[in-house]
Amino acid sequence: MSGAIDDVGLLQAHLKRLGQVTSKKLMIIIPVFNDWESFGSLLTALDREAAEWRVTVDVVAIDDGSLQSPEIGESVNALQNIGEVTIVSLAANLGHQRAIAVGLAYANQKGSHDLYLVMDSDGEDRPDDIAAMLHLSEDHPSAIVVAKRSQRSESRSFREFYKLYKMLFRMLTGRVIDFGNFCLIPSNQMARITHMGELWNHFAGTLVRSKAPLASLSTVRGKRYAGRSSMNFVSLVVHGLSAISVFSDLMFVRLLVVSLAVGIVPVLISVAALVLRFTTDLAIPGWTTNVAGFAILSVLQILTLLMTSVFASLSGRSGFPFVPAIHAPNYIKETICLRSMTTKLIVTSMKAQN
Image (cartoon, rainbow, N blue to C red; front, top):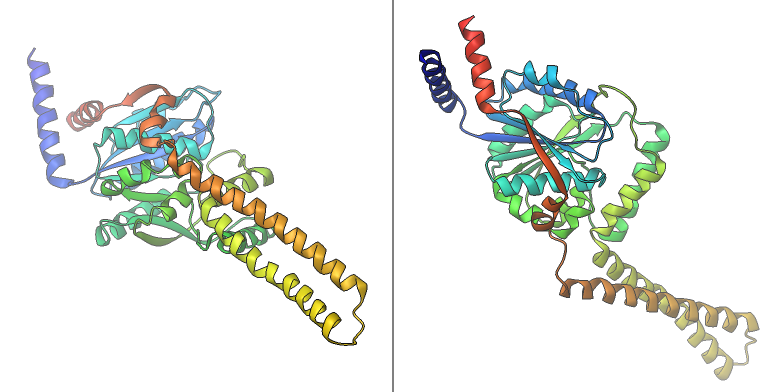
């Protein structure tokens, strides 16, 4: 019995010292699909870096319907600077972006932390950069800190395609996205983000659409811990189109305006041809009016399609939308706590006694 009392006393002492050192709680949200080896390596790297962060750190892995069981017992047992480690298992494989949406909805529902960090599990989002993100968040407490890669290590063809995508994205939406999933969100922005239906399609696009203040930090892409990326060309195209879909209403309106502007040209040509034909003796080629007529018909068809798309997009606002904060938690199959704060303090106490 005395041993149990001693353990309680040690726990209370550790909690008291922990409260004196740390003032904020950080939850790290990591989507994982089968790549548990990389996740274990990431936990070790996070634990090493967390010693310098001066915040209480908890980790939540969003198991996106993995076919492999997590085997990370050794990595979890060796942690010293991370408190709780939780696996939130989804009922099906929803995809990377929707796994993030469920993770954010889960975190918002708990509402137990001051800061929420989203990062990938493969090592390309470097734990070394988190200290700088936390520091920048202190300077801008209401801003979402986003990691912008100053250097890209992908192939030349990928980089050229990415430049083309960014140019097309800006032309269609009038917006710029130059960051990915790696970001730090203060608690006062979580409700805003998780109540936007766009979060179900694209995380970074939602951050831009939310109009929340953003603070950018230049980072370098890290090396993968294990395996190869599952992203292929088709996946990248789908990912890019998902980002554009967040601004579908703006895109359709911009295309409508451009089509109207372009449509004026064949109309003017047709009017000029008619004026010349009936007011002068100049010979007007027959193909001129034919080309102008076909152009006008084509423009009218495009305008009809775009106007239909605009009204369909805007009319969708009248219905009750999919709200991740409300609906996304329905996809959670089970939640398993691999490591609690109590476990951490007991392990730390035993090491201190030895």
